[in-house]
Image (cartoon, rainbow, N blue to C red; front, side, top):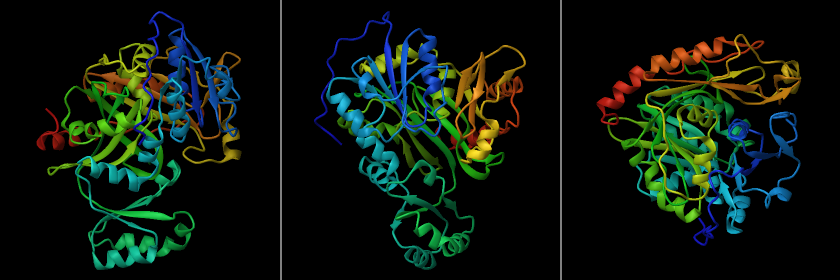
Length: 442
């Protein structure tokens, strides 16, 4: 944390002004948010650091090869991912209005061990966990202390490495023992540290909120992620296949977890979105890990539910203003519509789909949010090499209403070999019954 962060006393930007936004990104994931700002009539310059996907957002936003020459041009700088924390802190010290990133919040997300220690320090109910650097030591630990554990890489790891986890199914942990024994040599080359965390039964739920540098912005977001590739939570982990969410003015899930992070975030000078994934049961809400940035597809689904004009709330957030978001009642659902090679990287496979047009049976773009896409010759086309193509969203007073709307919108899309999960939101009936019984839902 940095307690010497310079406070920005710059004059507030008039709401009627045409504003200049500079996006700093690894892969262009913030393109959907940038497009919303363009629709509000403002200017965008977009810097993407990786060259592998250099056609992402072509024809949609103005892309620049370097961000530094445009920092003074920008009224607001938006950083859409972790990994730019030092840059963000320096920009804030110089008086720039920056949304996203700080060294402290980057570490919260990227270093699981540190994130867990901060959860415990601020008074959250954390699950017992044990950190290891040697696989034989972990094997001996489970043999001595039989039980269900979750294996997670830890230390400073990439988002892709976070997907390499194993949840024991056997009460003795015998299945995890087999996995560790058979994979210890290969994993030892990939992970310097790893963690065994006690497994508990419950409902996986996340809570997130925007933070203006001084306080959280209400209402807060409650969301239920679906990370596995196939319906029924089967297959490899992805960045996300879909999410159910709603907005809450007074959530005990938020109060018992993320709200406790207010003072550390103030000390870090953080401005942006932060989310914490948890397991809730009849005993407590146990935090698992932080996402200290815009989430994907989370931000696109939030845009479905936020009624306040996008640029308006971004400006207020950047200026440290206290305000309340106007949000829809009910539920929002977002579904990732992907093409091969998602969720993997395969250049040859990606090139088969690159440049394919995204066609709509009816000219209706409601609930359509673009991932790795470009606009060429009057067509939206697939760009990049990942297959993360669209996020389709819908909102309704009930989960069933939201599901009907979002899947009808997907049916309007013609896209070769598109795939998506058909069960986003179906767990709500069971999950909500449990959460209500345990006192987390009113």
